[in-house]
Image 1: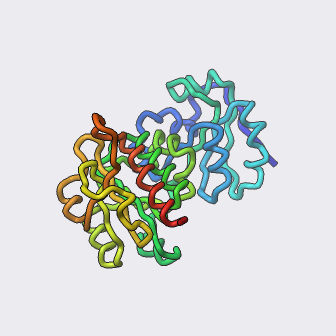
Image 2: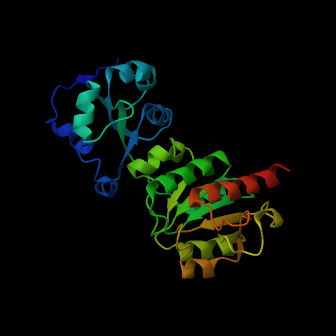
Length: 269
């Protein structure tokens, strides 16, 4: 049976992780992440990731009770008025629902690929530090059939709070690999006969002119600087999105969605 813990103050030690939400990197080092918003929390409850605790308003407790009760082990559930939850986390909440969960144990990319039927479609993200962009790219990856997302060593973690929120829970559904050396990871993919394609607005080949039906990895980089030189050099070729005259670039998350959609379109015939 659901046995929520009412809160009327902010000084309980168990609430400490919610008081430090602005220090997401610190939580990430502890192997934790925060899911924010009712829809995202509901999607988290539908997956097998370990949930440590939930912080809910009475309204969201009622809405999510049927999703929480079957969980084993059962997470600790704190419930309090919306204004108290906002005072606790230190910023306005759009919805009165948050969850603290453990980042899944890292899995080798080779192991993930062996479990998936080719042709594989991979997305590698290099040097993108805006967490909302990273989360949006993860969301597009899940929607457009990506086998796994690879976050390079200079990329914001897809498990940071704002990235998880922007992904709308897609981070729970698509495998995520955080690479310590993206050049080495891309070299490994090339040895597996995976075509590595650098996203480049100045590439001579538009996406629709490249065969994306084979095993391939789209590599996207920083919105202003693009890919780091060593990452560009590790890619076999480049691919671009043709644009109307007078426009020289797209937001990196938008460009990623366009490229992934073209790959899916080709694969669906």
